Image (cartoon, rainbow, N blue to C red; front, top):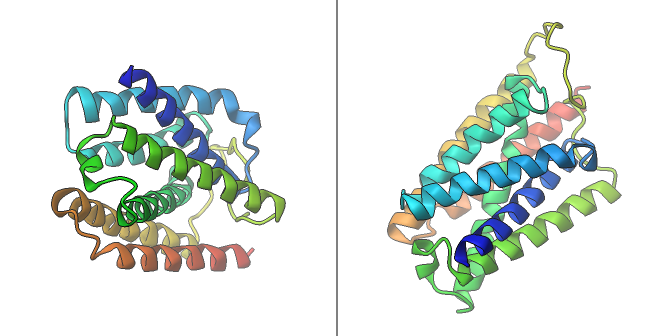
Length: 220
């Protein structure tokens, strides 16, 4: 039964994550719902194998997600690699959201820190459901406010057209890589030592990344 729950909440999370990604960059969400559904089931099943069946350290599962999302954006949604990397920064925003939800629930004793060792437990499902609900809400607000970034065109992209990467794009790409390193170091400290000392750094770097993306949008 835990496998069913794991798949259910995992798929829900990925639906929410892609809603956040697509609405952040003003892409049509429901137009790609079939592709997102396939991705959601594939990624969730692979996550179950990594986290539960093989019992591999959970941070490696998150790293696998990151690589898979970039590949999916490239080969399913037909988005150029460097643009897929930029879009992926939304995933780090979702990681920040999950960490904040986890910190709130543990500080209020709704769940315990043992949830880090039980990725298929009911406490984990509470964190997943709450994070996904908030992500859906943020996506809806971004959509209703007609907000989000527009410096990446709606897919599919024309791969025959060679576009030179602009200086502003390079800044954002390197910032995404830097934030990724900070995010993974933070997750290592949380999963290994159950310490949140680096969480403020992760939040600040992500805010800076959003600001850089906003500046890139203003150069259009």
